[in-house]
Length: 126
Image (cartoon, rainbow, N blue to C red; front, side, top):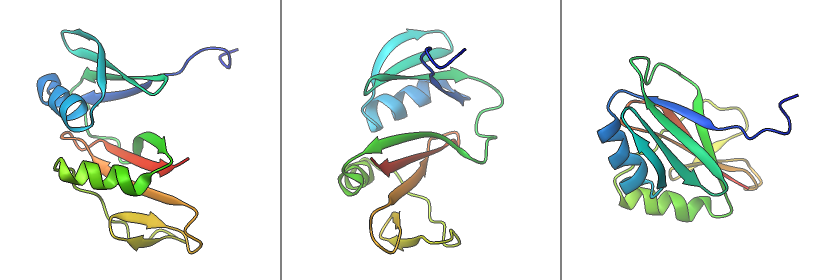
């Protein structure tokens, strides 16, 4: 029923102006539409909807993941923009290499970071 319809990542934030600074200026996403309390961004061929909510930052799991062929390059670029990366030392089968979690073969790479409201975001190799 839904398999033919586009799905959109939806992220709650407390302050849309602060979120605009992060998602546009820091992450480099292009705003598609901006109206009071809601901004949508284009990322690849997909849409990210950021909306104002008092429930912002309450999810303890990853809210959105970007697939890339250059995890190292994206992490380096985001670090230069002030993004701090999360460190999870207890993930089975993964070890830290700088700010990136990787498997022993180096085939899987993933890095997690948070937006200003504490929403957990990640970058993973495609």
